[in-house]
Length: 344
Image (cartoon, rainbow, N blue to C red; front, side, top):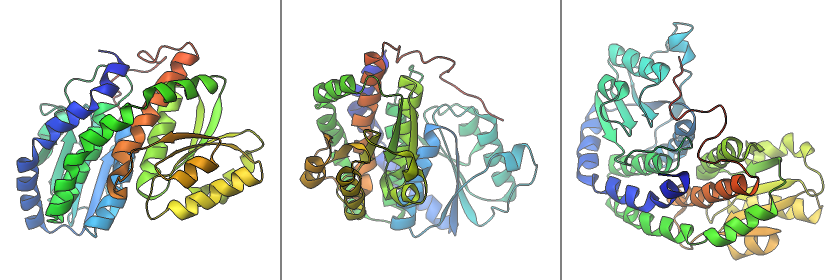
């Protein structure tokens, strides 16, 4: 199965995970009994970007501070922080990275509740953790993560809504496979846009709030598939220094769906376009943003902001895939990369 196939398999994979709703609700009941004061999250690569989504979502829905782990404190420095009052969540598609497993094992030794979110329920990580939330995405053979990434986001969204005991939000997640299908329907225009940018060897990717995770993940996809130097920033951080990089025709991709950070993101795009600082591509469902940008990749309308990263990354995956093809690259076999990366 090719990366293209797996990108298009995402609605089905997400439907499978939604079929585990009863198990997620049961898990949330168990975790609420542990009364954690914060979440300590450990992941690598694309899974770390899913963790950034959890940082915003669980902070908003559950009122829980979310800290992203530094695994080397456990493996290289042998100086783990105190985790007893926290919920430790490990996110890993394969569940085999030694450093991620080491964090979970130490947290369990300290008496903290531990949860593995992984696509392999028989992996070392799944066995190390006290609780398991399996993704059920099916085997992913391509080096670049697609369906496992969106499944991780959905698993986090299901868990956060269940922990908040928010039935309305939990039910809202049933819309996601359809929204992802709608996003996939725009592939033809995305492929043509990728052809327009076939010579792009560098760009800035912007995303804020929930979609900071999307900026990070889209940047990774552009790097690993199209060998493009893609630098991800939250717009406020971009304005604090990296904005000095841009000049006329510098490509800037802005992930800007409707939501709480839209107005500030739009103001930045207005400045970039007005002062001719950059050539802006916007991924959005707001007409004013799409009219303003030089090029637009439309998102389905009516996406609640808290679940928009599950949809917004899909056209980004397609853009990176088609950009690789336009540049004559093999998106299924990126150079020097393997499907499973083991870190210590």
